[in-house]
Image (cartoon, rainbow, N blue to C red; front, side, top):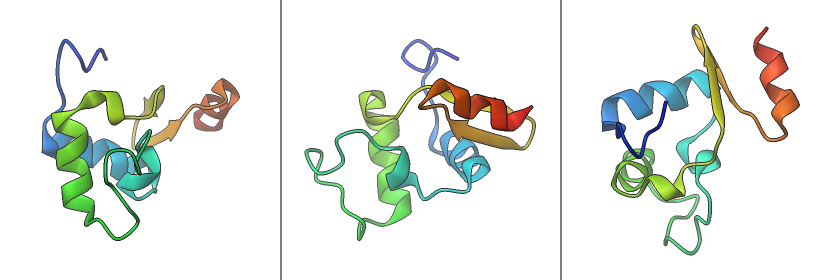
Length: 80
């Protein structure tokens, strides 16, 4: 999915994040520069990620009801 061309909604990004089993802040690049901390409510982190997709760690690989941040790319193998 190219989320710059087809942007996430808060709902579908929240669903994807929940499939990783991680808090949304763990999927943010440059959290401190964006003013996001561990204390930032998850809903606010999701909102920030939707507003600025550059904040989203990538790639995120999704298979069925699971997803991983595939860094390193070998992490994607956990899903098969």
